[in-house]
Image 1: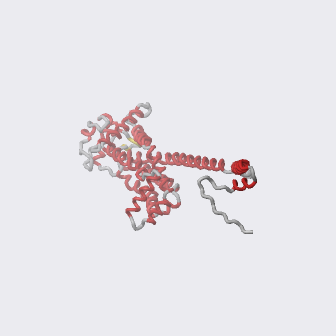
Image 2: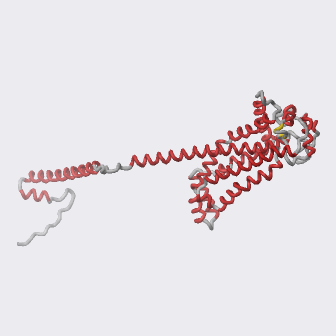
Image 3: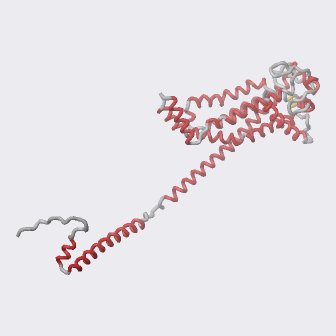
Length: 363
């Protein structure tokens, strides 16, 4: 049903097993070979999800920056949920904000975790529980597991870390543990717990510190949000505790996956946050430089040459108009030959206009 997940996961694990098995001091049946294969399976998948993770960080930051506007919209349209939703979509579209990108990397890791868990459990199908086939140890050793051949299955069953098979778990039924008898003997629960419990503690602590690093970068407004406060508490305390509670039911290889995933996340968070902080500082510095270039220098007088030039041009235009009008009046006076003509010419009506009736003064 989920073969489109199981086969890619098993093929990546198979490739890394062949790589580490080629190292002389390890070999194909070494527990360290299989453990390193699981670790680098995680690193491969997380490298593929690097860009979505960066997008997640940017989306989270953008969401924190938009919190004041989001709260204003919620307050303004508190009684109109439909209008509030429309305005929220409009705000997200204007800023290119996609809430799905904030949880995409986590959503993509869920099927990978499920696929790895199933592939690792399928190396030992002697149990009768969920997903088990109830095979005998002999039958199980002669059947391949997705990308792995029967020889690879036998190699995995032989792999031990400090005496514990990496496909075993603390609460594993005894009938399932008997499948390891032909491949190094049946391990005790104490041997399994001696390897699984320290890994569980490391996984829980790493989960806590990853959550603490994320919470410390939240803005004060985002942290004050009641929903965000609840999620922060879950991430800081409940999720790490869940690793400790669920660890006894997980194969050692899955716990190795969990530890490796948290180590990668811790390093990647600091790298990505440092890169984004540097980009924001460069943008602020560039904006400040542009502002300083446009602003006048301290002690310098404002440049009034443009204003003086425009004023002089306006004065010259006025002088030209006045000179032209005076010359027209002189030409009219010269044509009549008398001072009266100049006066009458000066007050003569324009062509096409009716003369005004003037009142004569009585002496």
